[in-house]
Amino acid sequence: MSTVSTKYWHRLEDGRIQCDLCPWFCKLHEGQRGFCFVRARECDEIVMTTYGRSSGYCIDPIEKKPLNHFLPGTPVLSFGTAGCNLGCKFCQNWDISKSREIDTLADEASPEKIAHAAETLGCKSVAFTYNDPVIFLEYAIDVAQACHERGIKTVAVTAGEICPEPRVDFFRDMDAANVDLKGFTERFYREICAAELAPVLDTLKYLKHETGVWFEITTLLIPGENDSPIELDAMTTWVVDELGSDVPMHFTAFHPDFRMLNKPHTSEATLMLAREIATKNGVRYAYTGNVHDGTGGSTYCHVCGTRLIERDWYILGEWNLTDTGRCTACNTPCAGVFDGPPGSWGAKRQPVNLSAFPGPMK
Image: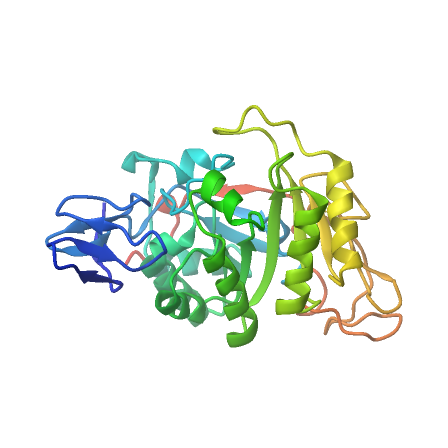
């Protein structure tokens, strides 16, 4: 296990040290770990304990992040670490994000090795995912900088629970992000996620108005918790008012997991209603996810209605965009990051053993 010094903390008058990375503001005595588990007080400072360690690497379709408007059809090298700074009762990666076992982190790799592997494997981007990259900020930034040296883009899949100062450093090196907007009430965040809504909304506004990061929003709809038409109306209205009409929104289906085994699966009707509400409120790119829905998964021109990108889950079909991302029927631009014709990666998921991968080890 590799530990590195961190930047965001300060000493308190009572002898504890406060971590200033995220809104938990953990106040630690020597030897204690923060809520996220991977940041700890050691040798009278806050350190990150999982630098260079991963819970595994896999090549995914970029649409799985989900990102529908960022280099469609291309492969992304994905990895995460252990721990999380949220406590979601419904976590669908709980074996990773809730892990308290360092042995979970089976693979070691330097930032340079990850970047080299992504380039060699033909990946257009590297994604920090599975658990929240905010808690391994130092590692993510170093990997991102190594990737950029090789022309590889970087993607953060995050809940957006981060303080203003580290937020600037973190997103400075990200090309794209998918932000989990888990609900639209403080009650839901507090009782179901052990988190707060306000910092997430601040992160979304920061991304839109103060960065060039391409980002999309995902909401996992949980029956009886965050799926009411009233809440969805308020959420999508806020997105259009504060972020604009071009930010894609993904409404995805919940399946019972972790500590919410008593809830049913999300119905397709609920997903379609969420998409309908979003569209009515002005969201130009609203999607359903975790279901086979050719209509709800596809992208349409907001001016002439042409189907621009046909999707069935992660598989692309009909493509009616120019190489610069304009509708071939009316020349209206489609918001996003497009670079020529779509990739052909499809729905494949390919595990990668970086420990056996040739390349720079430093």
